[in-house]
Amino acid sequence: MAQAKPGLTTVFPLDAFYRDLSHLTPPERARVNFDDPASLDDAEAFEGLQELIAGRPAFIPEYDFAAHTRTGRFTRRDPAPFILVEGLFAIHWTRILRLCELSIYVDAPDEVCLARRLERDVRERGRTPESIRAQYDTSVRPMASQYIWPSRGHAGLVLNGQDAMDALAARVWKMLLEAKPRNERGLHASV
Image (tube, rainbow, N blue to C red; front, top):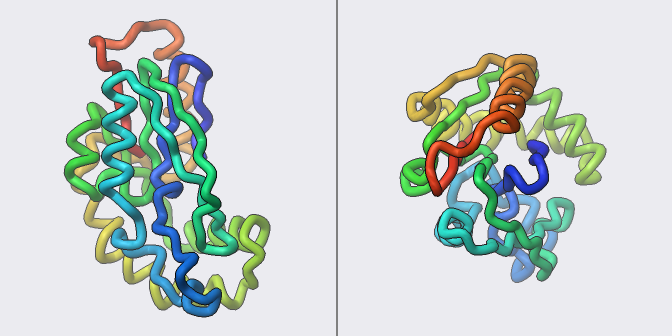
């Protein structure tokens, strides 16, 4: 997840808006396609983002990725001059994209995406490499082809790889620290 500069930036993580699956058994939850945009509550995310833009706090649900359920707790995000909307579908949903003044698509080779997912899901979500590879082949790659890769065309800026993103982030943070927002609303970027 992107790091925010306190008081200057609020990070709005779309991954927090996965739908609660506590009504399903654990094996049923594991079979849900989490790479389909329908697995997230985009209406709830849109409302939260609107709250921040209006200058009010937003309450972001906490999601337990290992159990595939919401925890029932919320994290308060306070409005800031700059709001960074981040997540796979940040530029997929038109009504969220329209709220952003800058949209960035970070492109990475498929093998890099798989390697990152393997490392993260083993470490943070208690999954096995075999289950991650199977999910990647059956849902991640097909959903990326259907939803993520086409969203690249909606981006105002396309970056190739994490190194480019890190360099851009350092440059943007420097600019943000030296400048004030262009207008009262500030700059809302989706990544």
